[in-house]
Length: 228
Image 1 (cartoon, rainbow, N blue to C red):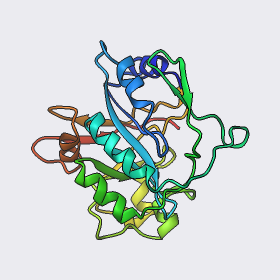
Image 2: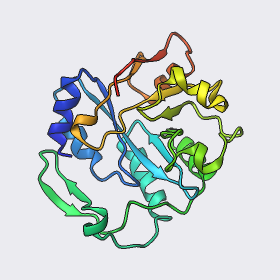
Image 3: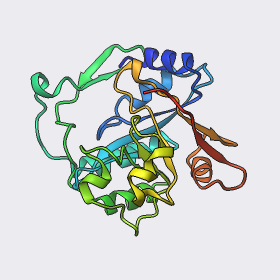
Image 4: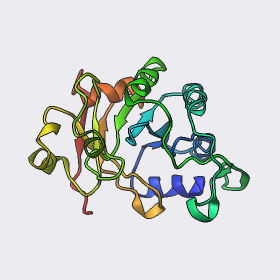
């Protein structure tokens, strides 16, 4: 997606906070952050990492320095495989206007050779937050991949796919009881923005978002009923 169009679409549906979480990659985050300058939209740097267990996780940070350090850590365990664009698609890196800079030649659509536990520890050590993504999905979801939510990892929240609202989730998946359940866009195309997650924060930071997920100090979160 083109950075200016991402920002335009986010603003048109009323978003004021957005996270960029490409698969095992962060090279396009600066372009989107630059495209958002001069608007009221805050862009958080992040990544969707696929761990050794074939689980997708959203890793969110406050700064580019944090995501850059995390990317270096991920690169050490990313398999040395070449991307085949005809099969996996192009992996473009662009500038803030969407102009081509280069192509990433490593295959990003694969699992990194690190565990869920070690990934969580690394994210926390850098001051970030890790949220297992679309946990109810058969492909790359935490529950289908492991069969349970690891009780020893204190996740701040679990993300559901857009097809299962949190109000229905615990009925179909009782093991989710007691967790803060959120719903994001998981956007791969401009028409997939959801805007379902509402946060009451003092500042758009990871520490504030963590408080909201735990309903601490007046910070709160809620999920809108958005049609699928």
